Length: 632
Image (cartoon, rainbow, N blue to C red; front, top):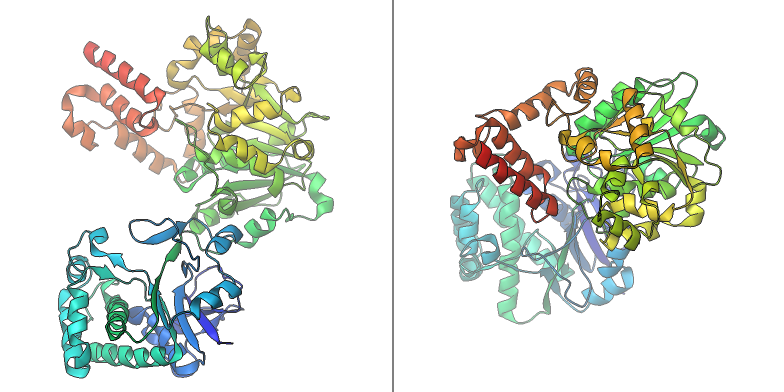
């Protein structure tokens, strides 16, 4: 049995995940720069003979040097925490850069890449040297590898010339191969390879001799941060040169192996990991005393999320404990810390739950102004299954009343509590309504006036879990047949088991001064009456639709939003973003078409940013735009 060790390099002070496999040895490259103890399960590269302190210039090669000097194995391999080899015998689909790409490394991905000991050993033992599959220079918009290096903004071609000179002087047997490599078209990326012991020790002696001499002769003192990594970049090229040299000798079993890039390789924080497994942060005996509220957002929407939560917290009661959960995939730690510092208090807790691993395999189509985050509410059934019920709120809302009142709505055995959708009712009640036909044919709802708006919900978690699974909900969304995404799906699932709320709990704003007079007025009189009554004293204002008050301060109920915004640190940034979109001299589009005027220029900018290309809404907006242009 061969002793195979594949060293996975990790950045110091990072938060990277780790694959549990006896062949993988996880190493902190540049351990000299660690500001904390070496994490359990990781090896430092600064023990024994090492060059850990040179990590900023040698990059992952400090791991290779440490392994060469201190570790014993029959095979030595090197990869990164975000880049792994594929031991799949077939050829998996890859990008033009030659990498198989995944959002996350889960069990299904590990199985697809055959990252198990048995398959890895069998694959590796068939070769003396495996290297990351070569990438053609054409993919990097270069004619040769020499040109590609020369065209890199922070690298300097004279360093390649110096490298070649050193090879000529110290290892002349490689001179012709090195030049053929640089004037060829194939690049072997990432310093990723697996070699038998004899080849590895020969190569390492060669590599660090050449790079050591380069370090002595070169002057990197004024290089940029990326330029200072030059030795690592040159080491990457040396691996390709050595591979070509062995190829020409025709004495070894050589192979090229696909590599997989994992986009999100950070380890989940404890909260996300626990909640993803349905484990409560609170003592289970206290669950009944907590009002759980869920929102979903992305990093770009952080200012709006912050203002929404500000409005929630400002109306809370001292009688209850509240726990606000934010489902997301990309909100930064810095943003999360800002929320916690401001909102967490005696009776308020706040948790950010990264749901990326749960959703990345699903299509989750964004439609017009509806974002993919809207689907995350499905995950409440699994992640917060310890709660009997949960309040869900869209982020584009301003809360004017204690959400505990909403939470304590009596559901009995109904699956959900929500407000009748006055906009949908208006669309369906027009003569020859195509939307009504959609309601009948696709949603299978005989009465479209029972269709609810899903931006404000009380979800009966226990009963919903009996009715349907999260996987089934996502399977429905993956069909792509639903116009209003997860809202349509929830209406189908909950049909006949809905508690209808006072419309004041979800007052739709008069989007673009169009919704009330052109749509809602067509709704049955009793729905219109309820809507008009709710507008007098909204409990929650919902800025649903393509136009928002942070885009146009003249929008319906915009003053309520901006009053809340003024009490946050995002106020000035939102003003700037809005004015940048409206200022006559504030954008390239204005310069291109100065004859449009402020109103049409603003409309065009909104149209391009809000309506996806090819959508029906964009086609409609274009028609309106040109009609108005004729008038102006």
